[in-house]
Length: 239
Ligand code: SF4
Image (cartoon, rainbow, N blue to C red):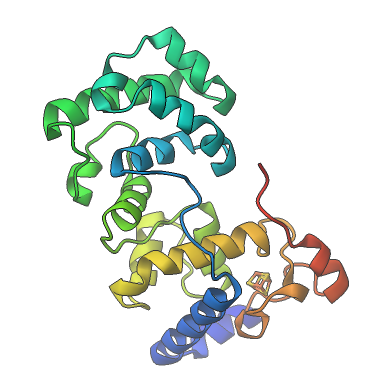
């Protein structure tokens, strides 16, 4: 058994809950501005921006969405968009043909099935084109204030490093983490963890020596532990 597995084996459920919540409290203090990094003014805008953020950065999406929402402000406008014009608009994000198709279909479906309103339940949201549980939870949590856990690539990596779960399937990760925190904390927890993943706990070279939760993290040492070298790895997300 590895040292990490041994630690996980020894840690009781209560101790895990306590450690998980301490980590979240420290991350909340470290990243007091943590929030959804996509700009939006309505559930519809957040839904579109979240779909567009696949395979690109939030910053790039934020640069493009003001123009997009001026030209095509609502589901009806996107449903009837000129495909070529929309493709040219989305081109800087990559996968622009697929994203164009998804947005046009999304406009149609929101209009036809939900009277032009973004639905408020997970069950309804995941029936929409381009919307899986992750996107649905982003919209529910950030636009409607409905507790949800968003398991993106950062979140999954970090909660496994924290030893909160060993699951890799996003639905199982979601369930395991949901059991450690009250629902009222879920949305902000996701922001704290995702911000930490983007700034310090990187996939390849985590900045362990500049990490505020190092003492609580079983994966300490997976990355750079020298404080000076680790500090140089801390960064703002790329644009
Ligand atoms: S100690 Fe290292 S692996 Fe653990 S959370 Fe911090 S940066 Fe990530």
